[in-house]
Length: 483
Image (tube, rainbow, N blue to C red):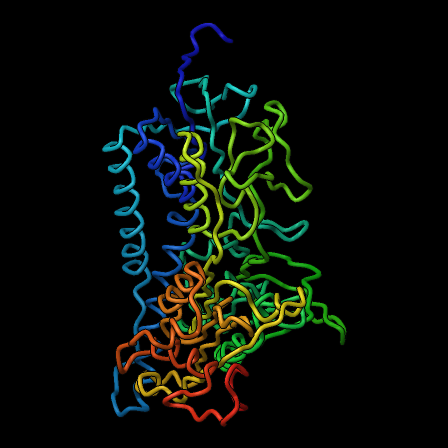
């Protein structure tokens, strides 16, 4: 140790101040442990708050308002053409982020969690080296790694100083609304930001190397979104790779390759959104004896322990799915395990949401997974065209589907596409976690008229009788009738 360097000790150190990290730190402090949180950023919140979930939803909410104003013409309501004040929109978005970040700092202080700003690397299994911090060495009894993930780049291509080639962080900075935008990647990030920019006025071309967007999501849930972006985007090119991107003074030249050949196009900006990778490199994990797999994830057990018993890992760095709410639950499990509680990550259903318009949400077993794993299921689908509330919202293309065990009627999975899917999926998650049956959901009185009724009626379909959809006699337990 260098003479004059400040050393400190803590019972629990949490590395990373994102959702998994601050959830772990707060829970550990609530359980009476001495906690230090190390964060590279000046503020806590991680990618989710600072440059991900929250700012993107602020832009998507704004896009939804513009879209609704345009669609209102069909109802006889006319608005002036929207005018974008990007500075004001950006300030509003940043103010939301700042307010939430300040709130996290306040909660940390209330709980007695010490926050150290700096970059942490392992010196050994009980010591961290901190760069850029007032404390140079931090000794700990237990550690929780919650460093998150970062955008995956195209080989040989990276976000540029001029900003014309962007990752999701650059796109959320909202420097301008480009006339032509190329979105590389048909996952949720590319689709969400592509939709926002398209509504804001960009002519969006989306390229995706697979045969369809959101390849892991059930096809019937994706179908309404495919129809929507087909009308909203200038072009959607599947089975297409980016062979080259060349930034120039006034734009980007892209060489695109598909089964029919190669084309060259000009865009004002390019958004690369092909996925995320765990931020586990250059942490000195090998010095602590921590195992890392070939993809960069840190394997953990049911209590989020790594290969070193007193060191835990949570969130994106600990494996898929890379979702903030999954990270928060894991963070709490790790804190409780350190405190000696019999806690384990035994979640039956993790909800996932794509915040496009229409939204897509699912939880538990999907139809694709059931097919791959050869699991017998009965599927009930309730089309929103039979929902009065959906019709008043111009959301008739929505769908609620539930997967049931054919013998017991136990709810195994739920998928929803349409407005409000982000909140509706919570009923499915709760039902799966509680082992609810079709009868449990069907006999639960849902308010009328609401979209949540479609969940109750999907359960009724499985039972053979739905109020707002005809189910032929003898169809009990056979799922939805042909539409």
